Figure 1 (cartoon, rainbow, N blue to C red):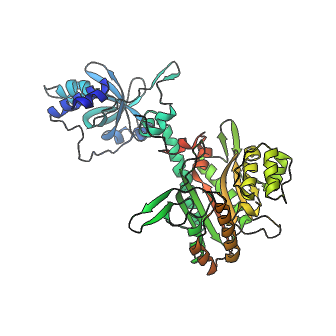
Figure 2: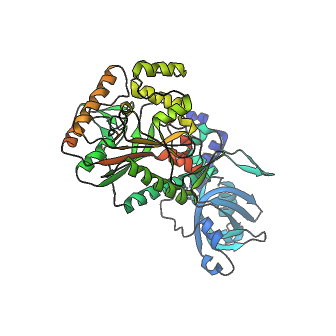
Figure 3: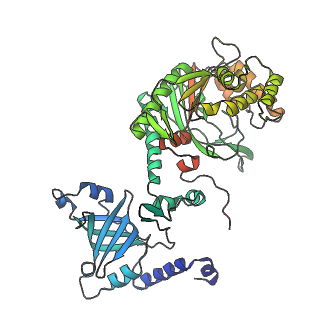
Length: 508
């Protein structure tokens, strides 16, 4: 070990490295390569062991991380944590070392192992005098030496001490957070269950899960600022996708009746409690459907998700109880703004909307067009009022360049956003399948880009070509998986539902 390395290490880290060397001198490999034959897990043993079933637990093999020890002289109690929970071990010196040489126990176990080390044990289950299901260890193997100490969480008189609660530590070192706060795993288990419910729902409808490009020549399908990279071999700029919509609609053109994708999308924008630059969206497109059908289907889907994840349609979010049982309330965009601002913006032109923003004390970019002005009004003054699931429907045409014009209302499109707990969870349309209208909408976006709107859409000429071959009437939806997981697991921040959220560079 170099001097410079030692200067960077804490006293605990230096001691653990010295123990590592001692183990190696004794001929013990602290990182063995061979398979360890685990055949039992902590919670399964504790749930299944009884006087009637004890014969099934006479030869168990478990592995996990040492979380605590209690020295009793010639015996030792320890607790290990595996993937399912924790269980107590009873380790007796004379049984671990039946011969005259007790060094394995006295040196290896008592002096050279530490909290956090991974060990494997073989033995049998039993119940202690205090009624705790434990493992009587007959054989013990070191599987991995931990060179950094874990934060030690202690409980006394009902209070918890030294728990990992600092967000900077939790999010940057999620691997430690998961060890010392094992309940954090439940959030991610529920996230997987949520996604599997969505998969099963659409699979049962006969729809196909697909994959579309992440690196795109045109960052289409949404209005957002993209991440830009460069492809050396082709010598062209490429963009990390901001949405997968246009590729999925190409598949509808190609003859699939229903497709969906869990997509990693990327937007080069700000970070806060509900935004991460890398996020997960599920998008689904169904031929011969409209946004009315999509609202009904979405209600059924989210009701099922709530039940499968939490056992009930009602979930607790902070101090609120949110009920995902269908049907959900429907409010038009114009009615929502009128209700919460007292201003009827229907029919307003851009100067009038800009004046309305000023009246409402909303700062807007000088380059913003009608769509963005209306979006700012709704976001600032209306969105937070909708706590229970609510469909905000019939958006102004300027806000929705990929959406079909309303069949009976002038100036609006057939679009909805699902708002829950004051945040957008889903966005859906009756998809625009008129290639001439779509080209004109793209051209309007180019004008906004020329005015300085760096979130305006690019023209995707290949997508226009696809539409010209004909796309059937289609409805599509995008559901934010991260935000939906926040709701279903009662987490206040998007960082709490991502294993590894984006962080600022670590200070040296």
